[in-house]
Image 1: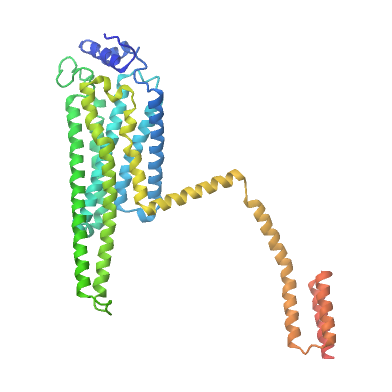
Image 2: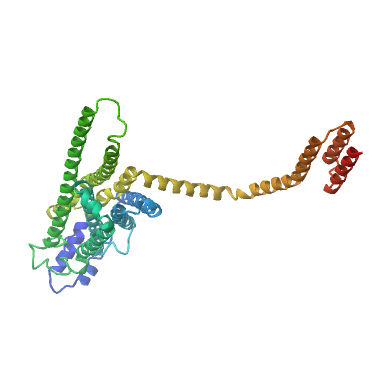
Amino acid sequence: MVEDGTNFGALVSCYWDHLQNKTVTYQQAHAACSAYEDAFELGTGPAIACRLTGILIVTANVSLLLGIASTRELHKPRFLYISNLAVADLLAGIALLYRSVDHRGYSSDYGFIWTFINVIIFTQLVSASALSLLSIDSYLAVRHPIFFHIHADSATLRAIVPMVALWIAICLFAFSPNMGWNCLDMQAIATDSANCPPYVYHPGGFIVSFALIMLIFCIIMAFTNFSVLLKIRERRKTRLGQAGATSGNNPGPSGEGGGQPGNAAQDEANRKFERSVHKARTVMILVAVAFVFWFLPLLVVPVMCVSRKDVCPVNGWGEEAFVCLNSLINPIATLIRTPDLRREIWRRLTAVCQALVAVIRGNRGSPQEDQTGTGDATNLQEGPALGEGQNSNTSASNRQPGMRNSELHGRICHDQATAGQGRHSYKRQAESLAAVEID
């Protein structure tokens, strides 16, 4: 057995040396190699990077999903694709958080780290499939708008069926090594060195299949988005030519009637096209981010692990965080490109902050309720007096006021303001005033 310290290479060498003997089972090899219990422990820097990236990914994608779910205007087939992408990115963030925890009880298990790698493979394959579906939807909206609008009623079904099918197929493929398609459980290390070279867990067939699937998704995204870009440029040139021809045919001021219906229809078509262009550009941004952050690394990492095991990312360098950075950029780019969703999330965050401030400051409503109650009581007390004063003024204006009437009226107002007598006394004084006037 190779003894080169408690590192990944030593653990792989230990398993490989034990399992090349067909009489040793995987459990026996695991028991013999349990001394390398810190082989998969992340260092301080990679652990912080994975944890911070995981928290940001989870927060951004949960906010995106809640915003879509709470905004009725966004309950459209296109946002099903975006939600599908957000769920895949959310799983990647959860996997990073799980990896960043110090698993003392699992770090000696050779299968633990590869299970984590399988989870990352699954999430990124689902992300690639979601981006491919988004690209196809954008392609149909821009390149084939008539077909897109004719079949708008079945758009939700056309979105759900391929998403469910791809999730099932990718899940079966990504976790097939956990079901036995790996070099340890097949014990192919000693019998099939071409398919399972030393220090390799995934067989060559799995690596090739993974690369082909990613390549297919890559081709779909590249073809659809490049076609959409060409169509956008072509439509813009056509619109510029139509605008020039229209201005040449109508050099004077805008006519009355004439071309208004046609212009209205053209404006509506232009608005629909601009909306499709805006959505297409959002998809292009997401695809570009995917190419930068994980298409190239995911295509290069398997080759690195096979050719140079000393630079394999599973050695604890924290490359998982870099590979999953697209899961953080995707929701941010979507929020920036979707004003309605951004406003809804901001409104809900503001409401939550206001509620938290109210809880921290205590029950702010009680003093206000007391003040409101006091004010209402005062108004109730002042109301009758005010009404009676108005009635007195009205009655006085309807008569021919003399000196005695003025004196009596002033006395009534004085008594009402200072003595605070009841309503029945005011009525008697008013009746006396009327009797004096009649006399």
